[in-house]
Amino acid sequence: MGHWSSRGLVAWLLWPVSLVFGVVAVVRRFLYRIKILGTEHPGIPVIVVGNLTAGGSGKTPLVLRIAEILKAAKWKPGIVSRGYGGSAAAKGGAPREASIASDPAEVGDEPMLLARRSGCPVWVAPERVAACRALREEHPECDVIITDDGLQHYALARDIEICVVDGRGFGNGFLQPAGPLREPPSRLASVGALVTHENAAIQGYKMELLGDNLVCIANAHDVRTLKSFAGQKVHAVAGIGDPQRFFLQLARFGLKVVPHPFPDHHAFVAADLDFGDPAPVVMTEKDAVKCKRFAKPNHWVFPVSASLDPAFERWLLEKLSGSKAA
Image (cartoon, rainbow, N blue to C red; front, top):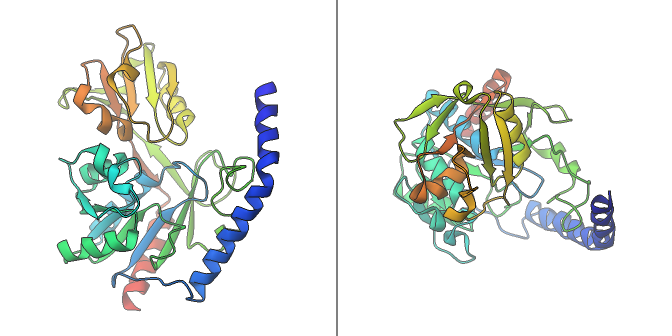
């Protein structure tokens, strides 16, 4: 109780700073809207997938699913990301392409996952406009861009905005630094679509992250069902925005989960996965790309895919067709 009380006290002490943060965010967005601050459009439709809170909320699986939907509809998507957690994300960094051979320490964990799973060109840069420009120069065949995060990156003009909300909602409701919010919840009124996890408290197009297999990180040919681990003790490792969601998902399959939460985008080292026993260590895909170089036979990754309300897929393709015509 004392822990929560101290957190609440800190939040209230930082509340005046949050008010300033909110004013700056609103004024900044207004200046972009009236074109005092410049925006740039890459010349092909841009779909922004983002959220209002700091930290992950399932944006990357949604981007992967959107890429699948677009490819099935004969679009040729490219993907842009800041590359958070990689050296390419440093301010002033030049755009670079993320591929299956890239180093996650350079391009970030999420772009590595996107490159491996999507089959699309993936470019990273702190300035999304520069990344879009570089992507189009190197891959002129691309006719639509999906950005992983970037809802608040207003320098990049966009055609479609999609906001993801997970079970954590908006935390204490305060803007940073007193709370997790980058923008006030009223911002949701202006996005094109709201995609919500099954445990989210607000309504939107429902998204569920599904998977039923584990893959050995040291030997990708070794694939086993999650049910085959039922009743076993496993060390669950998650350096994502909402680790609890991952732990609960494993527990639903009957695994005896020992949770090991890490900060979002944690730079894992071998010692982080040494728990003093031979029990299986299970992690997310985003974490696995950073652990592959020191993976052991008892290290497993749990791949998931986003399952979306079919109404969302229809809405997206209709909106995109309208953007292309415009």
